[in-house]
Length: 343
Image 1 (tube, rainbow, N blue to C red):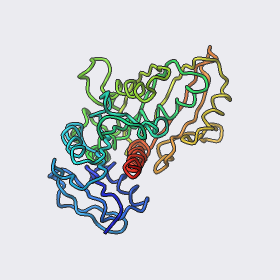
Image 2: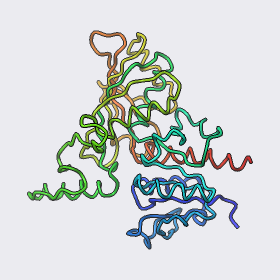
Image 3: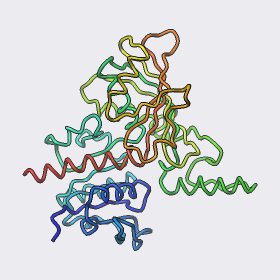
């Protein structure tokens, strides 16, 4: 009988669900100790895992008996319904949706910054992970915050359509085909045509008529991750871009103390979570096509803004499905499982 803990991936057929399965397989987790869950629509399918196939089951509240750790890559309403059910069965629930990110009782953990929180006592067995944009923001800003202090940041974020799941990928592919064939494509999940277009609308405007839920989430999530440390004001614009994978952020960062471009560059280069690509003359800078599959966040195009010794422009890129989601969840899950082993 396997000694490996039983792990469930809820949303296993989606973009990030597939990344989670790939990461578990790379860690050597045996197929017999992995359960794949999805919606009723996907139940009955099979997913690949370590050269084998795993049947996909429909996720329900009674699906978590014997499960030690459940990853949720689901819409927020599904996570709200099923993560407490997993917790009730004694499983750890690591959620990648926005469902619990602002819940005070649920830790919000970014491994690059506050993984220690997963080792500390907290109420319940649900843990939340931040969005891919927040991952890129905090991973980049943390070394600058620690050395110079950061007062505020404005981010213009171009998001690949994989942030909208498989439906976003399908929509961009189909619309591109239609447009190249001279036909006007149908609008699907996204608010406007994404093929050969940019849409300055990601999330909804239920909280504010001026800032989308995606944009407001960056500031709220960053504040929770940094906790009692110095507060950094983060604002920005989220733009859906006609990219399949990868998020690119253009940042304007106001430091609390003066620094040179070389100081900023050296500080970012020291971080093990970042990869510095910063030689524009040689055409070396962050791009979505370069970050695919890379666990590091890429940063470059570091420039001092005119008239200030403390304001800088940066370009940051993250693989939204891998580093921005799956790897964060996997790293948190490993720590949670070790807590149970130590009991």
